[in-house]
Image 1 (tube, one colour):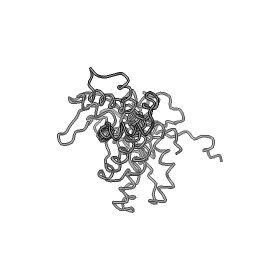
Image 2 (cartoon, helix red, strand yellow; image 1 turned 90 degrees about the horizontal axis):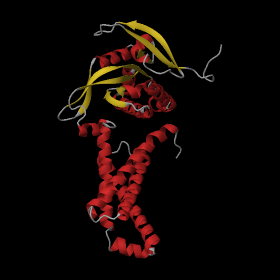
Image 3 (tube, rainbow, N blue to C red; image 1 turned 45 degrees about the vertical axis):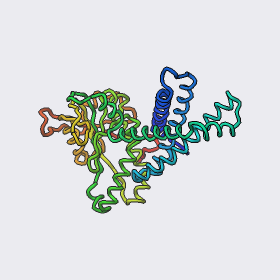
Image 4 (cartoon, rainbow, N blue to C red; image 1 turned 135 degrees about the vertical axis):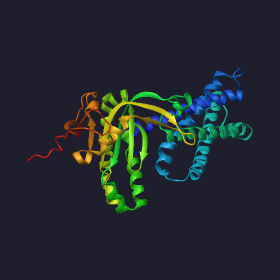
Length: 358
């Protein structure tokens, strides 16, 4: 399977995370089963190796099998597929590890290994424990995906349990002519259209270390901590990476829906208050004028004829923008702000092959 650079940067950290978690759980299993005092280094290494292999195979399965083919299946169906798949994976890997150990160190044949470990040993217990660890790792990953990367850890360690002031960059992204498209496609097909649109934004979001703050209808709100968003102009780079991803699938959208999701965005940053809220459903929310201003900037894209608008306040903090042209658009008095805000439109600089000469 051919992987682009962006897909590699998306999938490899995921696979690495599963592999590392497998090592940790392998060591934990060894300590729980044999105890700390009776633990031998070789035994600890063996279980860490087994955990590494199982975690690595689970990561590959999640990235290339489950994620690619069963994205929209029911929870129960996925649980069944994962149980069968990872039970098989764990069994084969455990059998391989036991065979290598016996062949290299005890000079036993495969038949002897099968008799000693599978029929009369702890093979079934080890497979069951491995499956349990696989499902636990996946469960933690799924819970984490509900809150966003890193937020589960923030919840556990109590970050933002009390309101804190933080500096953040926000981008409000919205589909142009969404009402017209929704009326022509109907509710169900339009919902699928938006689902595909959000999915195709993923590369740009992950590659620029953006966090998805909210999905609201056909709009997505992205955010960065100030240092990450400013570094290499990640917040600006994100928009153009998302734009290229959508452009690459333009023909597919037109074939399936007869429409192409042309989108607009507004960028602004500043100090907001962050805190966890809710009892039935917990999530981090941000409060402050920065969000209202960013939403207002995005709403002016159509009026000012721009796909991407950025406040001058944020633009002046960014490093030089390679391949991007910034054009002053207007100075506006936004409702709720005492000071006027200057807006700039950002566009990609055309490459020589893209320029039209007259």
